[in-house]
Image 1: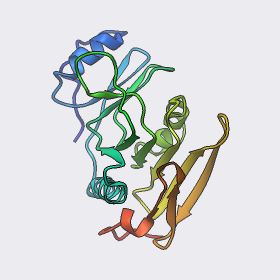
Image 2: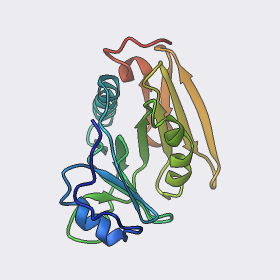
Image 3: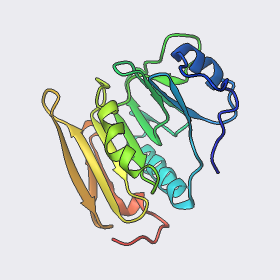
Image 4: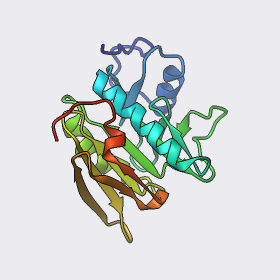
Length: 197
């Protein structure tokens, strides 16, 4: 089910970040914001929701109290390019940093961001979204989980601003997240899903 941008005035060619945040905090549905444009976010399939749930559970169990794992209701802001978005899963370790203000709803310093691909978002999540996310100084890993087959793409920050990508395929593979000092088996991520390997 697609969300409708009910809280935002229309038509309006440009929305300021302040207008976006004020309306978003009152909105019935979630919206992303980038360079003055507001985009309604759509609903998700069973596979997508199970994958997100499995990621949150798996990471939470392995991390314990070392880090906090947030679902897609936690908004993330990328100050370098102005993006406001809702990653499927965000992980932050140490002191959490939020956008100025009285609300603790816009995270600035995730260490790991995870997105689950759908047919409609695959190109964006694997390409342009990563280009925007990698501007977050604290970000060490960006993980993309395929919802059509058992495949995960792990982007990791190396020395300086260099990023490497590694592909994990099949239920026997294990996703490595050195910044969190943990490994997450793909059979945990794809629990209760019967997808081709």
